[in-house]
Length: 99
Image (cartoon, rainbow, N blue to C red; front, side):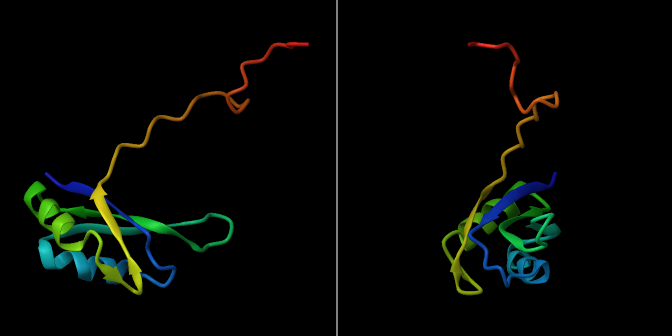
């Protein structure tokens, strides 16, 4: 089963191809994605790499965490599931006048 890794502290010049190339040294890369800001189109400085197996993911973490990529010391660890968003359109405000 594929294992998703978080890759942080990326240079704004890092490409998905360079991420894929780096991580392919440790096994099969199912996907490599850099996260971009919707409004500006600029990289947010982090991304995700999905490795083919748990063993490959472990080797990739051990082999890349703290290493230099495009002039930045990257952080690599197992990705956590994103917490669910709260429903509603009031931004978490529960209403009521407290005055």
